[in-house]
Image (cartoon, rainbow, N blue to C red; front, side):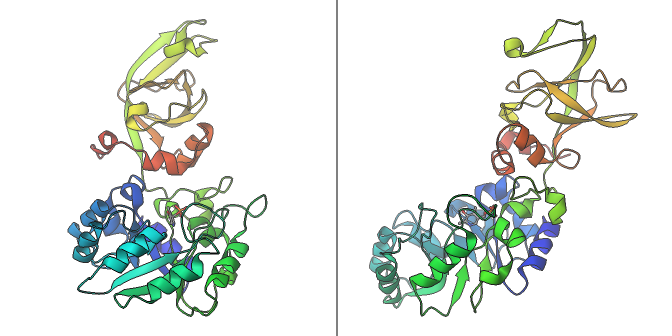
Length: 354
Ligand SMILES: *Cc1c(COP(=O)(O)O)cnc(C)c1O
């Protein structure tokens, strides 16, 4: 994770970096992120309890609440934990107008420029900004938006450049900082769009060594995987041709086969949608090899075809994703993205480090 942050730093140049650690640092643990991202300018996350964990783990630099506060009482923690808040809606402005904080609250004012999810729309932008700017106890630190299509260069929807242009047009006289780029923009899009002034980029997925872009391997972006999901062969058995494996008998042996049962299933975060042939790494005494998943993923087991790996034996180490098998490769086979697999890792899979 520290290596990946250094790669992001190299791409960011003079820009600042919020390391995005939402969803328990994409499954990697807030406390690990606090250590690994010591060189970041701040941590960005969603929930006050994750902010609390980051502070408890010793994080002293800024923390940005990416969706801001949900209720008025959240401001007590904003003050106590010294959080910077995104303001994306008029309800949040109304809460700030009622607030009488002991110290000014730092805010990122978020505009919608094409995602159509959060942020002030074009016709609301001026009023929202003016109401915030009128509050003596509010310090607008940056104008922010989120990119819809930074992971591709063509196709439908707004481009990175058009979203940057839209953001600049919202408050034309703004001379302060900006915050726009996610991992895909940082790693793939040249910084030409960044106006004079400072940008604080917000990479997430890249810091965990997964690719922000389908079709570009994380390694080709200089990134290293930070998570290994691993287990062991819990049983090995021989099957005759015609014998099926697992629920629904999705896969049937076509030849005399040796099948390994791996102690890992969807309750451990492995995707149930993984099809036959999804690669799994087995490390036997004679060396390691990729073997194909066969049959449906169960709650706590999967089966792999070991026929072409005679050295494999019960007890051998198995990597589901990590160094030998990229999480993006598994995700693609399973019809999802690395983000979902990493952030969906259940607590029970995290309990046993190697
Ligand atoms: C999750 C998130 C990011 C990080 O996106 P990646 O694609 O993981 O780099 C940046 N900004 C906001 C507002 C986010 O919610």
